[in-house]
Image (cartoon, rainbow, N blue to C red; front, side):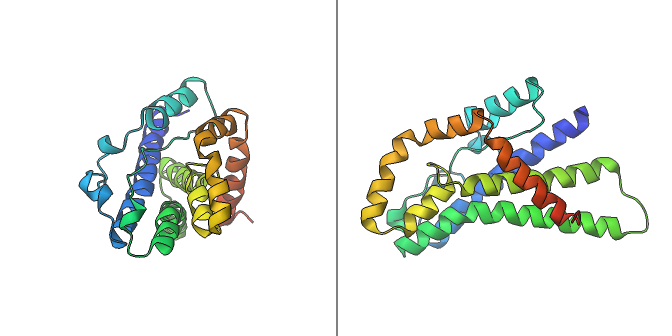
Length: 208
């Protein structure tokens, strides 16, 4: 892998996961919860968002093992739903905010790619590769977080919409969520998420 592309793709991945988390905090603030703001997490500065495993160890492991994929996450922003002005709507909207942010970044990168492609002069191949990576990794992050596995956003979206008696049953799997997530990551299931994201990337770039 081109070292320049690798270095810049790590920056893009870091930016994408940080935007995902910051959006949770910003939307939570809209609903009356300033927990993330008081914790200093409503910033694009990467330091407060670094998660030892998701931001450092996992990407490093994927790079050093020659993995064809690059993946990671940032430390979740603290949110207290008890502060929400509307609990049910707040939980749904805040949980979905990160997913929407990643899909929006993917669409924005695709629009930039098409704009540059329409210009009479050609643009650098590295820039094109980075824009394609931006689309792909943000689609991967959005799709991955849709999975209803705690602590992913999809589980919180589902939990916010379940009737109370079903929500209580669903919450029983939360202590095992991280183990389920690790199994998902290391049994090749993440490859399915990447494959779906690649198909969608091709669609956004006009491959269909």
